[in-house]
Amino acid sequence: MAFQSVPNCAEAVIEATLGGKPIFNVLNFFILGGYEQADINALGAAVDQAVGDSWLPIWPTNLDYVQTHVRGLMNSIDLENVSTSNAGPGTGTGTALANNVAFCVTFRTGLTGRSARGRMYVGGIRAGYQATPTTFTSGIATDWVAAIGDVHAAAVLQGWTPVVVSRISGGIKRAEGIFNPIVSIDARNLDIDSQRGRLLADH
Image 1 (cartoon, rainbow, N blue to C red):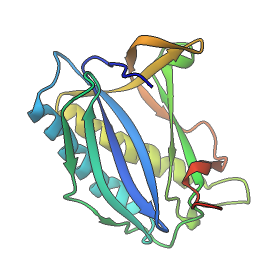
Image 2 (image 1 turned 135 degrees about the horizontal axis):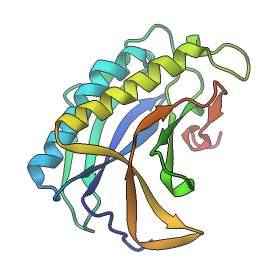
Image 3 (image 1 turned 90 degrees about the horizontal axis):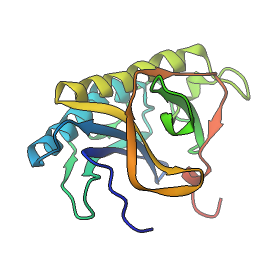
């Protein structure tokens, strides 16, 4: 796919492993006036610290947080940062459900249309969050909405705004990606969701 610029934006990829399989969660951010290396570095360090403070305590002990990789989205060859200060295993009670089990959170921008909504499928779900074969307990929504909010808040302190990025409209790739600031994080339901790509090879 040809490169598509998203002006003044960067992505933070939160990387972990579970049972030998990588798990990635991606958050997008905008900074007014563009970014320099110091801005990218600050975002990486802030996200890494927030993951250490808020995600590791609710991630299971058999999941390993590897790093946060921040990459600018404005240019095809762009600035990046890798932060590993808080790398290590989760400290939450118990072990994880299957790699593909996920909890879905929704990012709201206050605007209508699919391009103005985002979602993230959180991986590394502790078995203690499962209520029934198809649902989680309400605690998962409380914990993960707060944990993601902590990452957003840490980024804001460094001058970055959490955003939803849209690259396609009506099935057609945009000339440039667009973005809208996130105003709320919601858990629409407690259903158990899935990310099949997180399963081990040949599963």
